[in-house]
Figure (tube, rainbow, N blue to C red):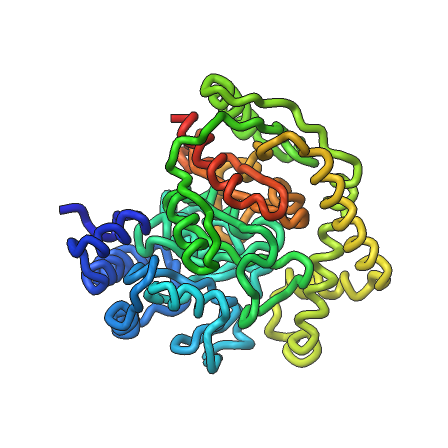
Length: 422
C-alpha cells in the first residue's frame, strides 16, 4: 500500500471519502515522516504529536476532512504557540485562530503544526534546510511550509507573501506555490507587516491541491485544474523587470517552457512591461519596508536588542524616508495595476520565471525576490509549478501570473503549462 504521507491532498481526500483511509491513519503517517526527517529538514517551529492526533480525531466533515496542514508561524493558532519567528514573542499563546486557520478547520482540515518562518516573515532566516540538499536554503520567508510539503510531512501548508515568500521557496523546494489575489484569505490573526502587500496563500504538491484547499476555505469555485481546458491559452512571455538577475539556466528554462506551450497549441507572445510597472517595482522596497516599520513600532521601540541586525538596518533606513515616499509607492502600485489590466487584455496569463535560479547554497540567505515582487504588488494570483532540475540537481519552476480575480484561470493555465512540459 502507498505510504499515506505520499498522497497529495486531493488523493487523500478521495481516499478518506471512500473509506479506504482514515484521518487518524493519515496523520500518523505524516507524523512518522516528520519524525524521520525533521532532524535534517527542521521545518517545524512547533510540532505536538498528541495535539495533531487530537486534531485528526476531531476533524469536521468537509472538503478537507482529515487532511493535515501546516501553518506558517506568523498566523495565530489557539492551541499551539505563535512566535512570529522572533525571540520577542517566544511562548506567545494566542486566544484564538487566525481567520485563515479557522477556515481550514471549518472545512475539515487537521492542524499538524506550526512551520518555521523568517523573523516576522522578513529577512533573517530560521533553521530550515532544503529537503533536496540540506546545504541549501529552502527559500523564505515561508521556509518551513515549503520544506514540510516537499519532504512529505504534510499535504499542504499556509504561506504568506510580501515580495516572493510563497512562490520562491515553493520553486526552490519543488512544490506548487499559490499566492491568490490580494485579500482572498482574510488576514485577521496574522502578524501583518506590509498592509499593502501581505497576502496569505498555500503550498501543496499539485495545482489541484491548491484549488481544493483554497476553494474549501473560501467557498470559491476554482475549477478543476486537472481538467483539459477548452482551448489552449494565450500567454504573455517576460523575464520581468530585471532580466540581469536571471541565471542562464533560468533563461533557458523559460525558453523551453514557452516552446513547450507553443507545441501544445498555446499562443505565446512577448510581453513588454509598461513603464508604470517598472516604476512600481522600483518603489516596492519603500512600500514594504516603510509599512513594516509602522507594523513593528512596538518591537522597534521596546525590544530593539532582540531584533536581527538585517531587520534593524531596514527599519532604521525606513525611518530616514519622508512619508511622501510611501504615498508615492502606493500610488505607483495603483497605477501599475491599472496599466497591467489594460496591457494584458486578450491574454490569459503571464509566463515568467519563479526565481533567479536554483536555491542558493547556505542557510544565511533565503534568495532574491526580484522575479516575484512585481506580481505581488499587482495583487493578482501567482502560481509556480515545478518543471525541471537545475545544474546542481535542485528543483526549478516557472511562474504563471494574472490579473486580480483571475485565480481560477491562472490555476488552470499553470497546470496546463506544467502538463505541456511533460
